[in-house]
Length: 406
Image (cartoon, rainbow, N blue to C red; front, side, top):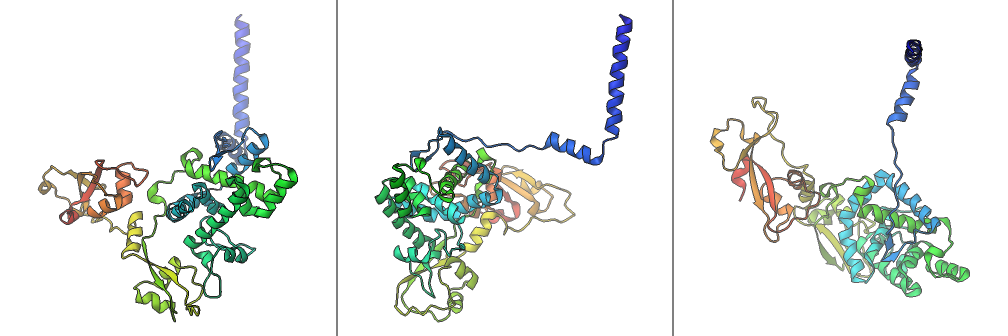
């Protein structure tokens, strides 16, 4: 028996020595590859079972539909840069698009077509389709957009959204189905109509179409799914990192403007800001020979500061005087005696519990306490900017600005 144990021990020691010997001969490349295999992970996405577009259920039990959607969900989940920008831009532009869709009786899901078409930006395609909704010139004019040397309303988000709504109404009147109406935005009403008749089917999901259109609806569904459930797909984009709407006011004009640069200066804004808000004006002048009525947008007073303040980039930094022996701000409870604190005022914070009043929002609260929206959200672990009446928020106010708090 002892002999058997002895042989087993010898064999075990031999294995250990062999392993150490081989491991010692591993090259740096071998070690790197082994570490890569041990640590690197890429996870496949899971397809949700309850997908719908405009309340029409997506038949994911059909393996071909399932796999086609899975492809687009995978691509858009791992197309991180564009997906992050889609989510950020949605916060700025959906508040403009959504009311126009609603006013026209178009389902809210159609706002995601903008993300498919343009990524919510005024781009021009190789086929000269323009703007958020990617209208070609002929179709744009057909649906009421003015397009000439001076003006191209395909670049006007509100007017081009209205034109898109008119198209969707026409398409729905033809098909009595919103998914087919959305597909026709890519393939054309006549193209979808001809394919349905030829194949003798009445559902998009039973239709065999070209690769671009077959991917179009699945991409739309994937973008909608990720936008509505970002955390499920690994996207953590709190509200204060999304682009806020720019507060604007509008003026109507019916006459010419000889110099748009001087016109912008007369309104106390830069030409850059003017063009950012009015990209549909294509030249430095507006002759307006037909005396058409146009609506021009201007930023509300302080709008640029409000947007910067939303991100928290405009706030003065705390004191960095090395005479203060503190690496963190000193927080003093509102009931404590501030006179006992010897550190500089700009490094001393008073903690205040603020109870949200009716009609208050984070912007107004931040202004009241001379701080920023992102900081309030961080202090209170808030993901969204929405607050409710009687909600209690923790606010840290610098002692040097405390006298300014009303």
